[in-house]
Length: 252
Length: 248
Picture 1 (tube, each protein chain N blue to C red):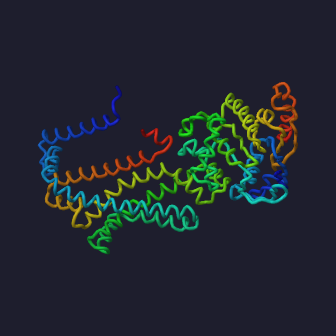
Picture 2 (picture 1 turned 90 degrees about the vertical axis):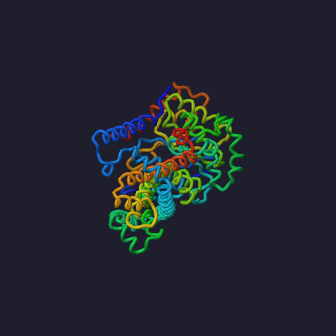
Picture 3 (picture 1 turned 135 degrees about the horizontal axis):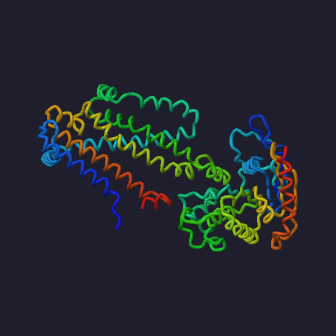
């Protein structure tokens, strides 16, 4: 009988939690400074309705921003693929946009666009767009030359080659970019909410911190980690459902 | 129907990669284009297909029955080095690719491809993916994709170079059998003397620096009577031609 792959990380995680719990109990660490995992769990259960409402708000912003970002990255990647002049002109700008620190940008977005949905969604798009664009462009470049040659020799045009060879060749690279961006999406949303919001895990964490409720801060962190893992699981499911050929069998 | 390539010169970085090369393909039979690596034989093939990489300048004419043609042209089929089967398509979808690109509906393309699976030794592989097939089977599928397009002229770029020696021999026999069933004019680019002498009706020998044809050798022995001993003198001739050209 083989041991499931999930066993090793779960065992390690359980050992870490047990160590944390034991340290808190035996060293007498005040719960205000570091609550034990059991305390975090208790806070999570007691405040589940409140945290759940904030988590839904965070997930809605992250999902909207992430979806817009995927669409925007795809359209941009196609435009840049077909116009090298546009690629040369725009890529440095896109890369430069990533050098702006979130810490500076988030408050400015709130200042310019208020406490509504727009600044948070924009921030998520800004953070997640480039990894996806880069992964798509890199995937396009991985198209074997022989595939393009073959299609051209059959009479396909540039769009035909793109649709039949370039796009499918970029699939694995695109999914890797999606996974990276998905993790950024939740973090960026929480950061945007932290800078100013009415609802969301970011503002909940800020308020819990101001009330010296480390247990609630950690409970919100647990929920945010679960949201990211749920998003990654969804992407994995999409990957499996859409995989064809060797990719499908490797993943099965 | 004949295909004539006239006075082809391909230039790169100020030097001639191929210089004033002419050849013609008759209606049927296999013409092998043999030469050392880097002599430009693949570039000649790509020029004929209209897929010469950017950065290479070319001059020359390609005439079909005496008239210049635009490329890509439906009379010219192509099989790149290796098999170039798309890993995300099933074998049936790969085989029908050229027909779909040419404008046939998916259903019509499949209907045309399906009856050829059995004669090509591919029955039962329709729903499989390329990674599930052996090298020889993949080559058959690639050749099916080329043949089903009904191109009069088939340009093969070292089609068996990735196969092991035994599979290569089997595939050579198999190719001859398929061409007896569905006659085509084949231009076979290869650097394998054995392959050229076993398969071709005519061998064009290319030299490098710049690429040019230095000899045209007809192979008159019928294919079913080509024994190793009979082909040895021909291989010696080819070997000496190629080595002579490589010597400074």
